[in-house]
Image: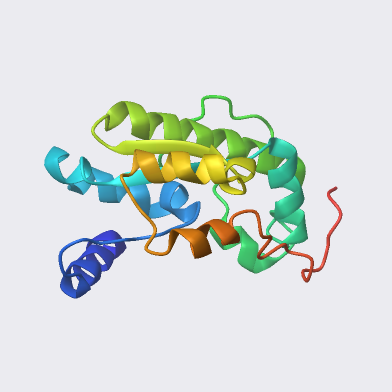
Length: 176
């Protein structure tokens, strides 16, 4: 089981506290299996940040990154489908276009996030947006929520709002 092996490898390397960062694959793939295996006491030490984006931003990103279903064979590995083993989104419409599929996937990820919050209330969950992460107030809210303090506050604050990984270098594919 991949989740068990992944967890064993992380446990073997960590000393004390652990910082682990993931992308949407946490919700899409291994996160639920991971959380199910943890005790409530361990889950109470886990913090999850959910980056909320508008549907249009996500659709645009899928096409800009060539991750839309049917655009690249590799992208299909990372996309979830209504036929997945555990679907939490009740509406399973006829997905005729890549756009339909992306919109269903957005709804499915949101449903999984809501399931995680309800099923594991001991988790520390924080929702934010790109706008919030690009503002000093938004970042300070996140840091306060998780009781964190940057080591060099001035340098850290100078980074807030500075665009990184804008995606301008990626090829653009038009939605169909």
